[in-house]
Length: 241
Ligand code: MN
Image (cartoon, rainbow, N blue to C red; front, side, top):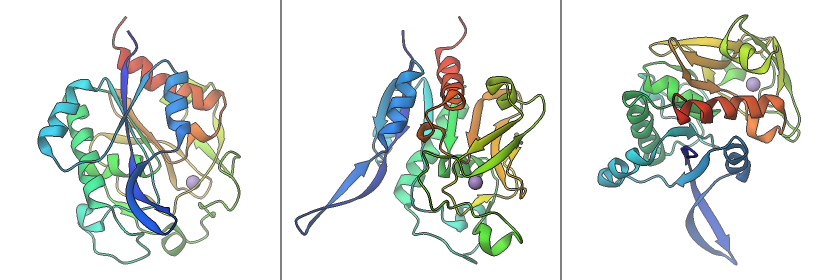
């Protein structure tokens, strides 16, 4: 049986000849990455209907929390707006928070990607750097001007860590499409990798290696590293052999 991997959709708007419609959307690379890794991608639309959220939880063997062009309200990690904050999506964030909490409580694997890793950290009590450019002197540009199909900066992996084991490498070349980063780590999380400027680029949970996050988008880099990361999630979602 292939494990069912819930993938969270983004909320947005389409414009058809001047008429605007609310929509949900997702980069199809997420779907492809989960399917290639042997999971069944189940795309779930954000809702504030708690009954619906409760009904989704039993369908979840694993969870991918996706990113998007928005930020988490700093109030959710006890801060006020001090730097650039891209308009939050409170309903989407609350929905993803509920799924993350259910996955953590139910022993299910979680992969947080980009903003999804940031939310995983916040759900566990961590905080965020609101704007890398404004707050980290000498930081690299983490919003690459080129296609994210190509790499933009390196990530130095923790020796003997999860990603080193999964990829067989000590350093990765990754894309970068974020302007925020993790600051204080949430409960039980540790740093798996950093870019050369010290920005946290990968995390995992102590004793629960199936709960992890990457600040980049492996699904947009169709390579062995991407396959290893999504493969780890799907293998964990399959449970013990
Ligand atoms: Mn980066």
